[in-house]
Image (cartoon, rainbow, N blue to C red; front, side, top):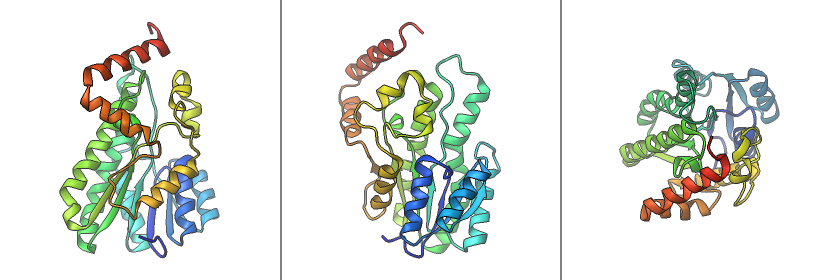
Length: 257
């Protein structure tokens, strides 16, 4: 697959991985809709990529659908939708409901709500491509952060369901599941920052390059950190040992917190 003359939407594209994806897609000749909750950031990236900025707060119920409909009205068709926006909020059982709602709203429900418009659009058009930026936490877990772990697991599950349901109708779905990437989210991750960077600290452009390259493959999971596959296999094959190891890791990082 080449992105030359394709219409691409990237959410969370004002910075980090999303910005790198927008830049990589534009470099291949795509027409890019740059979406972010930060209008100024979206506009800056759109200006540098020759794209179109559409601000959207994906934590709000009506915004993902509005974004898709506005992008379709602007481009006439969406070929690839990168659902990249994500938030890392809260910690453990103490997290208040408001933060759970935001985490689930952005990390899961934004994909569900976007799909409500994308799937009918692609069924009519003869196909399309949905790429979910999940996280290694969606295949494993994130010690110390329940909302992020749960919402990313849910995002992966929804992406799997979409693939199962629509692959035979030329709607391709992929899930990107990186570990440590040098973004503001990582810099703000506190006690787990070094843990996330243990295997390798990638730059956003590295992840974007793999995401773009994976469009031409049949891979559902895109794993910028190959070790994630080994961890996921261990989790399935020896779940009790894996849980014990993760519990010890959590105790080492957070103590009795």
